[in-house]
Amino acid sequence: MAYSEKVIDHYQNPKNVGTLDKSAKNVGTGLVGAPECGDVMRLQIQVDDAGMITDAKFKTFGCGSAIASSSLATEWLKGKSVDEALKIDNMDIVEELNLPPVKIHCSVLAEDAIKSAINDYRVKNGLEEIKFEESIVH
Amino acid sequence: MLKLPIYLDNNATTPMDPRVLEAMTPYFLEHYGNSASRNHPFGWEAEEAVDYAREQVAKLIGADPKEIIFTSGATEGDNLGIKGIYEMYASKGNHIITATTEHKAVLDTCKHIEKLGGEVTYLQVQPDGLIDLKALEAAIKPTTILIAIMYANNEIGVVMPMPEISAIARKHGVLLFTDGTQAVGKIPVDVNKDGIDLMAFTAHKIYGPKGVGALYVRRKNPRVKVTAQIDGGGHERGMRSGTLNVPGIVGFGKACELCMLDMVEDTKRISKMRDHLQIELLKLEEAYVNGSSEHRLPHVANISFKHVEGEGLLMGFNKNIALSSGSACTSASLEPSYVLKALGLGDDLAHSSLRFGLGRFTTDEQIEYTIKAISETVLKLREMSPLWEMYKEGIDLSTIEWAAH
Image 1 (cartoon, rainbow over the protein chains, first blue to last red):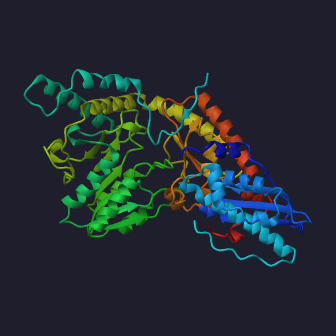
Image 2 (image 1 turned 90 degrees about the horizontal axis):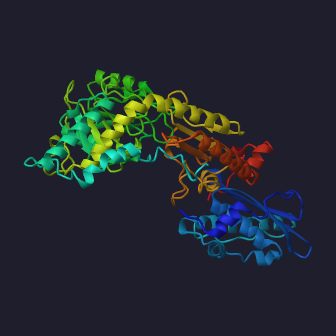
Image 3 (image 1 turned 90 degrees about the vertical axis):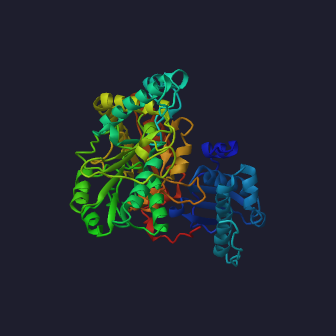
């Protein structure tokens, strides 16, 4: 299967690979996927007092599309407010990376990782956890 | 100068040996007769060429030329061998024994037979990929007509103990079918010493053309017959109708002859490269060989690199190195290799495997390039793997409750 140029670029030059201090109060961590499914994504956001995402990092175990989806997600997260970040939809990732149908689950995983990181941040800061609808595409 | 891309997927198919192509060419343009045409020179020379090829093929496996039924390839041979026995021996019984690590052409044929009312036992293999002989014998019942166990596995290269398996089959009066696709031409295979009654194999895994193969069907001690699955003009002693693929068969014969001539030399050279590749790659942390290293084809290595995913790993170099991964993430199923899972490998290791299939045309230079490219990619991907980070922190990954997706 041929990968799109954007996927290849993110795979070869992934943006924001790394680890933030998961015990810090202003850091939210999302860990989604499972080794038996062949992909695990960890996405972290660092939020300032004004609710802006100042940094985002990821580490991903998975195929090139999973790596690219998480790399792209961290790029998009930086500079957004937490509320804006919630609006990132997996189909935006599919479109940007030209993911084929069999790789849509990679984008779903990235969206789930964003939401999971935001919820982790919210809980740490005494906010209520947001209940999300189950993703349609699994 | 090293020419890219490098081909290390010789278990999938091999390039043709130029000597094979040379032997085939006249049978496309000059000697294009139908080998069944008995009334003119075109037919005679085609028939003669087929007869000669039949001898070359038979010789490689220690068979009589009359025991060779030409087919379109190993999948057809698997179908004809198993379905043909099921039909032919229906009055004796309806039970077949096979193993979970067989090729799909065998497993799906067995599933088809189950739909027809047959009974199939799928034996589990041991962690090294070998069959448990005691379990095999225990599975035999009065209704058992066939044992279908592959000679060597396509994914892990593990070679089954055919003489021991056939001894059990003989003892109980059960026929033995084997898919010899990966073994024939690579290691010595002798249908008499190995006690094989039926064997499917193909030309394109031994530097011959695609689209031609053979089914060996024993004629003596015991005389075995299969019911044809393709009906028509009664070619191949009535067991496989259809005009013979003369150029393909000529190429198949030549390929078999070359394997016989070159086997000792090829094996020595290729296994040395394979061992070097394996030793170097196992220098990476958390890298493991899948399946028995002792009972294994000389040109195959299946290695898992823990905490990196196979398809992601391939992407790091698949423009330059042709390899196959045990992770079938490209299909919508997200299922890792059923063969690796049958060895008892966890999903994480099964998803992290690469299959190396070296061949006659593999060079030392290609192996050096491959070692370097794969080592670099594994290290790079581990740097971005959350599982590797957790492993390094001493976290037991099996204790984590994964949000299964």
